[in-house]
Length: 119
Image (cartoon, rainbow, N blue to C red; front, side, top):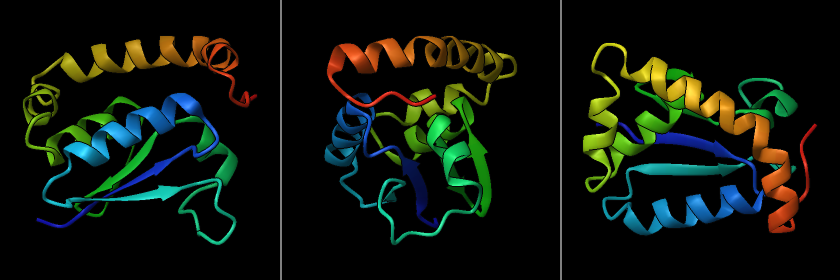
C-alpha cells in the first residue's frame, strides 16, 4: 500500500491538534504529513485553496474535504473502520455535509483556540 499524503494548515491550532493525534496513532508510518504553511513545499493546487479545505492523496488520487479525512482514517488501524464506513453509499455525502458546516464555524473556533483565521 502506498503512503497517504496529508496536506494540513500548520497555522491552525485545531488542525495541529488533530494531526498530532493522528501522528501518534499512525504506528505503521503510513502517512506523509505536509504543512502547507512551510514556504519550501510545493502544492498540487493553489496554496490558499488547499489551506481552506483538508486535502489528501490516496493511491495517486487527490481528495478533498470528508473524502480526504476518510482516506486518512483508512490509513490508521484504529480509525480504519470509520474510513471504511465512508465507503458505504450515502455516508460520505453525510460526512461532507458535516464538514461543510464545520468550515462555517472554523474561523470562530480558531479565534477561540487562539489561532489565525482563514478568510
